[in-house]
Image (cartoon, rainbow, N blue to C red):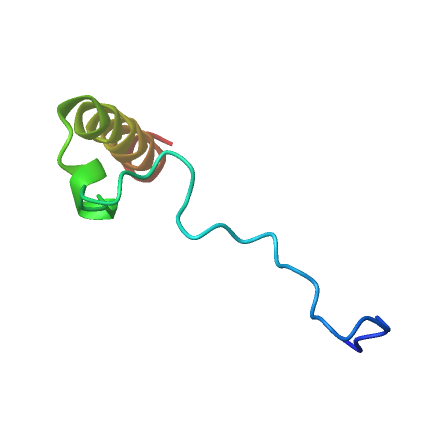
Length: 62
């Protein structure tokens, strides 16, 4: 994007040094950490079973 400001000093950015809520000494947790949580895996397992049952019903019962 074209910079149209006439100020000699560049405008400050809105990006903070670290994301809000991040503690600098704490390591970040990613997708694999989220997938290791039991409630999420139970939910995904139930949804997977429902999809499997619907597919089997469509293939063999209809």
